[in-house]
Amino acid sequence: MTQNRTHTCGQLRMEQVGEKVRLCGWMENVREVGQNFAFVVLRDFYGTTQIVVETEEMMAAVKGLNKESTIAVEGVVRERDSKNPKQPTGDIEVVPEKIEVLGRCRYNELPFQINRSREADEAQRLKYRYLDLRNPEVKGNIILRCQVVAALRAAMMEQGFLEITTPILTASSPEGARDYLVPSRKHPGKFYALPQAPQQFKQLLMASGFDRYFQIAPCFRDEDARGDRSPGEFYQLDMEMAFADQEDVFTVLEGVLPPIFAKYGTYNVASDAPFRRIPYLEAMERYGSDKPDLRIDLTVQDATQVLGGCGFGPFEGNTVKAVVVTGFEGTRKQIDKLCADVEVQSGEKAYWFRYDENGEIVGGIAKFVQPVKDAVVSALGLEKGCFVGLTAGKLLTAQKTAGVLRTKLGNFCPDHMDKERYEFCWIVDFPMYEIGEESGELEFCHNPFSMPNGGLEILKKAAAGEVDPLSITAYQYDLVCNGVELSSGAVRNHDPEIMIEAFRLVRLGEEDVKAKFPAMYNAFCYGAPPHAGIAPGVDRMVMLLAGEESIREIIPFPMNKNAQDLMMGAPSFVTQAQLDELNIACTKTEEE
Image 1 (cartoon, rainbow, N blue to C red):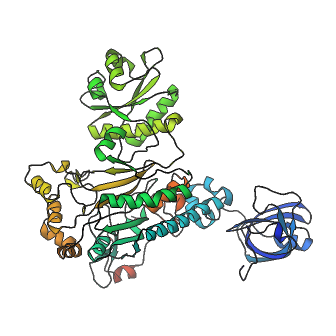
Image 2: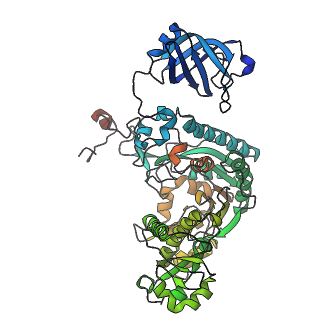
Image 3: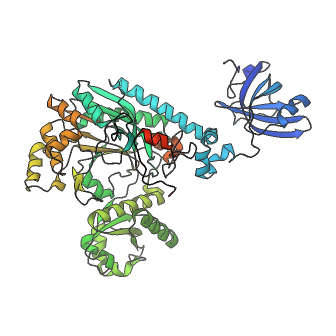
């Protein structure tokens, strides 16, 4: 097969019995069963093969080696007496005539057992990632990632898209997250930025006359990690289409994704096209989330009218939301844990009561509900045996907490969740603007380059005070699968006049727009086509396909939650000479 081996460790079968072969790999295990008799498991990328040592010379060759040393074995294939049907090479074994050490493992103790590395502390796994990746289960996720990326590329090219790479060193622009900045040596005091996304470049490609663009794009954002987001860098299937609207984008992805999810996913069932379209306000009202898990059949109901004045303090003057569950069999201990989990995740409390088989209100806040029992039963459509989870607060708070509660209840109640499938939906009609949590002022809710519903007219009405800017929706959409946001996209604003008016509402004037986005503004002034796009996250897709809960499991060399590469020691200090060359002075260091 190659210069150093005739076969891989996953290749030999009964057909090779009697052949002389040369295998190379890692010595996974040695089991001595006699003075000059031992079983050696040899592992490479492709699998494992059993090596049977039967001579004093061969025993001496392996006896002094630590596990995970790399060796080459030359010997003859023979049929095994005791076959292993669970192993592809389980019908054969190799009797060595020569064993050569290619790379000695110099440590008696490994940081963790290779085949059980996923049970080890995450910090150890990341520090010794090259050992963690030797675990076939961990390696399998990386192989899956390669297969999915190849399938995505093939599918996009079949749809007539061209793969075009865009710059990594670019200009800083306000796109919702913190930039990673790169100092310029040739231009003191100036900085490049690593792209948060190829947003402007792909729109410029549309203005340049390219009709369909895509790339597996690296993106860089200086933000905190979470289970479905890697700090620092991530990859997305970035795409843009000229002379296209929202439905054109939907049609492309509805053709590309389901076959890939059905083929490579942990579950082999994926939504058929067209995916369900849910307006943002409806998603928040019915599911308490703009990324609902539609495998769960529970919905959120409004209970403000019947419970807002029941006398329970947290409900007074607030919006009250309810999640009704039939067939709920949780114990009091399980209910308390579920409510505690909701509070940990949402920062808000959840409340509850039961409508028991006798038609009585019991448990939780029952004494406050009992006086309005008939109204509650009617308003919420309760059946005997129901469990009712409740949340309260300002509208958005009550909705979001109810969304967390709905998800927890769905995961707890198997009758209400069809888990083994991929359920897609589009969330549409997002608000164009929102009040920033940190600034307290009007900001773009999603992509600032989106086309508002109502165009220039609605923006001018908002500027004149005739329309509340928070009521303006945009041609923005999210693709959601199983409660995970895979992507955000939009029909783009390709008209300079509309662009200026949109930015004016967030306190950026025409000169600011020209200064911050000179290329795009000028390009659009030369006549740009209507265009739309989206960028599903590759990492999140593979995470869902692999059935993993952490995105770090499907990234070859991930950072930890603090954006540190424990294996390479990044970020790290640099020399004063390097800083001087870049005209940088550090006013504070981590050591201080």
